[in-house]
Image (tube, rainbow, N blue to C red; front, side, top):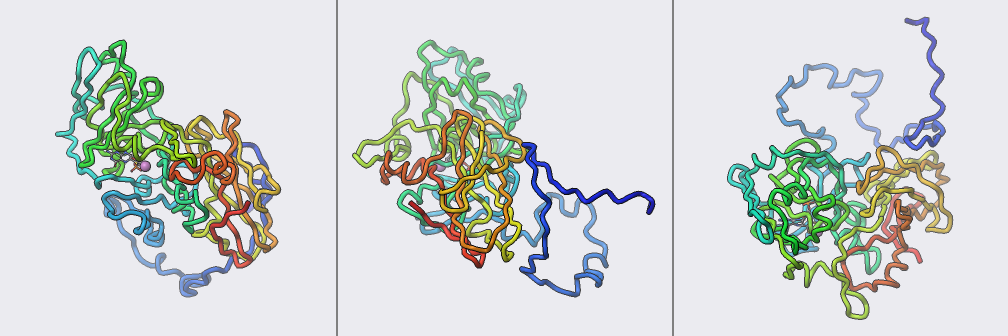
Length: 422
Ligand code: MTE
Ligand code: CO
């Protein structure tokens, strides 16, 4: 065994895109000295006793040391938690799949606690044969597995009027990305048989809000899923158990949870949600309507206000997320100086269609203040705009569809703050 030559230390890490990253020289960051009794040469507590056996933790949870990695809300944003939002702790996650228990939630009337045995999904209206499905019926249909991001149209909406919330979780955490299992809505519609004038659908939830949204038929037949699983397990109650609509690339408000009814019609239904809320009020008083697609966007998740740099200069990993409702992410550029100079970030992990994509940028920090920005480009060639460029076109009245470039100021101490540069 001792004869085996120790392989040369790997000089390079190779990213998914084939990009080379020089192996860094790292010193201990020394941010938290901890308890010397548990550190070499001492034998730590956890090496001295038997631990829990199998199945003691019948449904596994993260380590107690990760208890700070949770969804959080901003209580002054809304009057009640039943009609509010919690944010994904994107600053504390990596990769591109969101753990189920950390997916942001947005409810208009709290979480519906649906019994899957009693739950029904009805399709009616301009169809040859109205249908009512039980969950068992749905789960017997052919199914597909696809990862998609789900982003509330109001994500980053507080930032229209300037830097407001101090944390990527709060500025950009109304997004999650999980692997859905479900059946294409097209199949259900084919089973019901569409009348020639069937142009729009109304989706309705079984929560006390009976939340409804109109969806154009073309989208419904293209890639909409009726999904019952996320990341392999059944949907969480918070995210629509036992069944929700998945409307890839489009604003999350349309992803009706606890889905109980699909009405087929020849025009959109005008109702409170659409007419007064999910429109974008412009400076001239006109409102943009039917702004369904979520345009390309990105954010640096670390460093960020809740994930400061905890070492004094030297090798630093910058990381973030990019996504586009129009397809795949083609590239992400990063600036360390508030948008004057840009360099390519390294995409890492799968680059899926309409899903979160992870990027990294490794650099040597000289300890001077930084103005960090990221800028996503998608496969259509669309480039994420600056916030000022967005405002020039859309004004500042809306709280929706704010996909402008985010700036984080890094102080020499490593602390990070939400700022704006122009
Ligand atoms: N569906 C129902 N039935 N009720 C709701 O309140 N909220 C919508 C949408 N679907 C909602 C709903 C909004 S505004 C968003 S942003 C997404 O669900 C959030 O999905 P999530 O809770 O799984 O993150
Ligand atoms: Co929403």
